[in-house]
Length: 577
Image 1 (cartoon, rainbow, N blue to C red):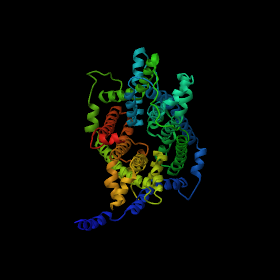
Image 2: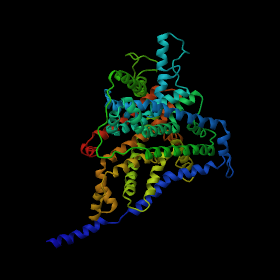
Image 3: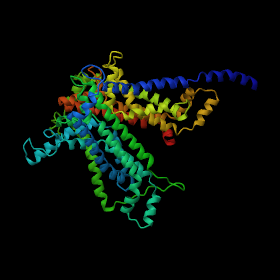
Image 4: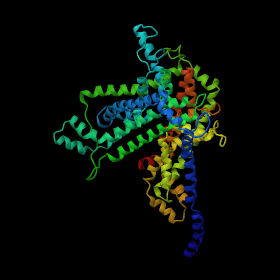
């Protein structure tokens, strides 16, 4: 009986072993990632040496970068804006993170949830919200100000169409990067060190200044660099607020070079310094996080030390409410109010409430259905493709199953250093030529979104793989399964929570993308983000707010479903992680 079972098992084992597709998969992924990442960069460099008027190679485009005052001013304003945003975001986020993580401030969990929710808000939609609030003529704040004091229509209290207004609007939607890193760092600071400071006579402020802040300083610097990078490479907010103010930053200047008559060579040359600055900032951020830190010796550290605010509690509450009002509450209320009233300046009452903007967007505006269909289709396709690629690449890299697999990790991470506007230029130059003719199709947008979102998907899946012990996969290999079958049957089910989280993260990132999209869409491939930008130029704020609410609702719905539906996340899997 035993011998019969063994004889019958052998063919099954041989069938299950099949062909190991690791090498063909590695080769295919190397080709795909090279096309996604390296091809646009190649054409970007190539065109930067080409003259827009014809002819051979030339350095004229690079010479223009140092002699053209408009380009120099655009770069100068962009760098100044980014530094100011980083500083303001750090000033806002650091004390708020300390209040939430290390004090007895009421509602700390709710505050964290609200700040985290602001990640979902596209910065360009936030800029439009501040147009509604603080435009000099039609802004709600200025209307109320003039009404209270009986001032002329030319008088105003705030003006968002200024350099300082641009810095403020961007900082409102980049400070969560600093807040999240600092709050997480404060959560990890062991109370033993702070207790030791107290035993030695250090007061609360002394301990905060000499112990706590130095330990979280790397997180503060890293978060500030991320905020600087986000501001420097952003297109939407500067296009909405800087152009009406009469000045360009480098992202809007590159976009203007694509307007008629296009100057593609100069646009390519102008994009390369932005790419180099981005790489330098990312290297600096990695160096800060990698070299500075602390190690706890001697076992488990104590729980974080909570500071009692005492009479300062009300000051802290006022500070936090002010920040939340400026970054979340007021912008969201402005969008909701504008979507349901006739004009921005209308008061809210039964006579002014209307669904006309919703009727126009959903039933009368011909571009809406096409834009919604394109946006959600691309979101689904991008999230599915990126998650699948990230899953396989992370497996090959973390398990080192193929020699040279680390190169795949480099390719998968590299797009994080490519600003969206730079990638848009590279993809336009790569696929708008007669060889591919992808410009004007949905495929060039899919390529762009896959490239942009690949690093996020790869990083999440790579972190998830580190929590699954390879012995489980080795058991499958011993039983005769190939690497890919082991990945599909054993590892992927264990990672379903991380897979769903990565899919949702990529989906939300895709439907809110504008920087690269603005250069790659045509009339037949419009997306919601581009429609919002186009409507802003025509001043149709009611329709913009309706589309913005739809975009936000879809984003929040995806996040909610991923976190609440057991079959997707599963409370058991969440408890494990």
